[in-house]
Length: 324
Image (cartoon, rainbow, N blue to C red):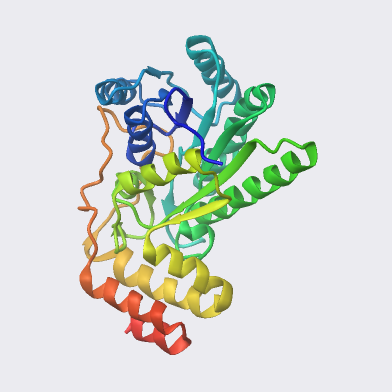
C-alpha cells in the first residue's frame, strides 16, 4: 500500500553531508518536516536552510549518535516541535581503510560505535514513537559492502553487514508483535559521490578514492523517499551494486577475489601517497559541509561496460573478463 510523504515528520542522522544531507533535502522537497542531526552545528544550519528553500519545515539538533542520551534528545525535540515521528533514517557513518594489522584498534572500535551502536541508538529512540502511533518507517542505510566484502575496510564492512542483521532482526520482532504497519527497510548504496572518502581514516599509504562506477547522492535519497511511499525489505542502489550483491550469493569466492582486485586497482591511488590520518573519526570537519565529494557522480565507461558484460554473462568467465 502506497504511503504519502507530504506532511510526514522525518528524522535523518548524518544529515550534515553526503547521503544524509541529500535525503533531508529530498524529503523537504516532497513536503515533509525534517529534523536533521549530526555533529557539525554549522553544517546542519546550512542544510536546514536548504531544506526550507526546498519547501519543507526543518529543525537542526546537533548530536553525536554514539551518545544514546543525545539521540533520545533528538527524538524528543522532533516530537516537541512537530508532534510526532513518522520516519527515522539512520545514515550517520564513518570509515577507516588500512591493512588489518595496522589499523589502530581504537579506530576499529570507533567505526563500530558510530556505524552500529549509532543505528541501535537511533532505532531505540524512534521505535517507541512508531509503536505508539502503530505505524511508521525505520530506514537503515547499509552498503553493497554489506553483501560483498572488500579488503582494507574491515570495520566498515563488518558494520554494514551488522546493519542488515539489525534490520532483519527488528523485522522479525515486529512481526511477532503484530506491528505490521511499522516497516524496517535497508538501503544498500554502491559507490556514491560524497565526502566519505576524504573524511575516512586512512592507513594504506595511498589516497582513498571513489571506486567507479560512482552514482549521485540524490539517487540514494530518491530511493529512501520511495521506501516511505512503498516500503521494501532491502533496496540496492546502483546497477553494479545489484550485480555484486547478487553475484556474491551465487559465487562468493569469485566475488571476493573480484572485490580484492578492483579495490587495489581502483580505490587506492597508485600515484598519490597518503600519510596516516584518523580523518573525521573523532572530530568533524569544520565548515558548512556538502552533499557531493567532488567525484563527479559519473561512471567510468570502461569499468561500467566490463561489469555489465559480466552481469549479462552470469558466469565465472564473465566476471573474470571484467577483472582483466
